[in-house]
Image (tube, rainbow, N blue to C red; front, side, top):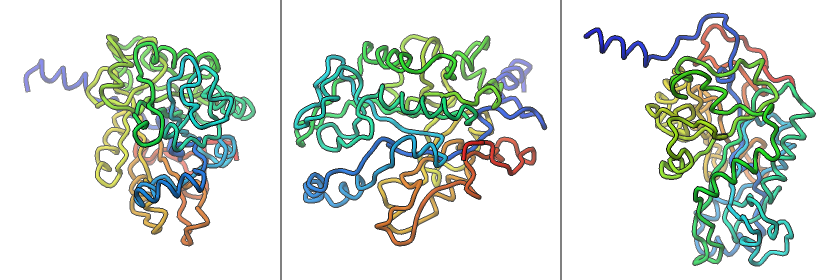
Amino acid sequence: MSLTLSLVASLSAAAPVQPHAPLRSNDIKVVGTHNSYKKAMPAETMAKVRAVSIAIADSLDYAHRPLAEQLDAGARQLEIDVNYDPKGGHYSKGSTDPALRRPGFKVLHIAGIDNSSSCVLLTECLRTILRWSNAHPRHVPIMLLFNAKDEQYASRGGVDALPFDAAAWDALDAEIRSVMPARKLITPDNVQGSYPTLRDAVRANHWPTLAKARGRFLFALDETPAKVAAYRGARRSLEGRLFFINTDEDSPAAAYLTLNDPLADGARITRDVAAGYLVRTRADADTKEARFNDTRRREAALASGAQYVSTDYLWPDPRFPQGYQVRLPGGAVALCNRERRGADCADEDLDPVR
């Protein structure tokens, strides 16, 4: 290998984790929930969907308890779907909910169809989460994962979502910051520091220590390459932005990856976690695993090293007799991530909130 190539290789290699170094915010493993705001669809609506497609109906046939109850039970990653509505009322078709007529982002799964949400306004969701955090200030950092909804559902009886243009992305950052104090946030700029790019900082393990990250939140945008590129804009990394973005490992903005299939991507997840990235994966999807108590995906997710393992079953669904659910071993809320820290990990629960 030439001197130049050797230098490039050394600069791009991830910094090794030093034994007995303080735990950092990427050195943990927690369980979270998928579409965390979602309540059960009304029976009448579900029957209409089932008449069109049993498979689609089954995939939508799940629900979550209120956000604070999930946090009480140990969820440390929540997922929120946001719909742009700067003037208010765009998503109020067929609904008498006054919240839908107010300006601001709406938290809905399928606009006009799967509208049942425990907090219709994004600001309402965030205030609920912030109140819980303020009451439990020693919790490990919580990741709030966002989908930016722009699907067109009018032809299927729903509502066509408004597009996410430059104004929408700026408004999303601003609306979150209007609720979340800066002291409660872990942002890309916090992690990047003086490094040339966010990726350089992550590969150098420049995440905040767990001690400094307690009681704080980080936001991740789980979206398509086109959407995350629009959110990033012309920035070299994510300078000034609130969200980390789902991107590939070689991007200057790389810090977070969505790798939802731990059976197919287990080796990649383990490699990326060891390199310093944050990864979210899913233990189940579309209610399939829960219906048959198929634990293969859950076990692969927990073994992969992904920091955030998402589920629709923090509690078992009583309709499914075999009791499928997803929790960390021993009922812990947060564990040291052995795929990053190896023998340096102890077995104790890192989160004092029980």
